Length: 132
Image 1: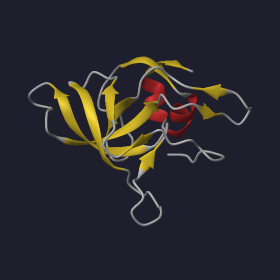
Image 2: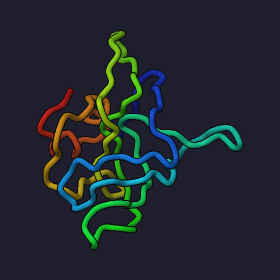
Image 3: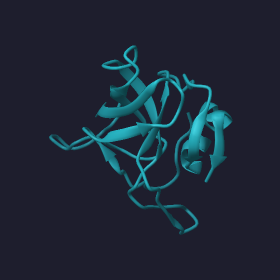
């Protein structure tokens, strides 16, 4: 995992529901927490594109439902500014289920993946079809 330069806009917080865009069997996950989040007391932990989150599977195959999983956020609706000054946002909040170290559990990712997530997680970049 590599760091991200600059200040990143965080668009996903605890309780946010994300679409799962890989073929692990999960369809929707809900963010429980963001590991490594450092913030003010009573502030809700938030995550942005490229961040690792711990989530609970809400919809999916019976084997996947109610499991606690690690996931990497690959798209967010909240607009974010890139270092070159361009603003980018997506039409949904989406994540890819991974291991704690960032190895993807699925073998295919549907839809675009933000460049920030692909640069930070090499295994996500290798699995992605399209990087925006």
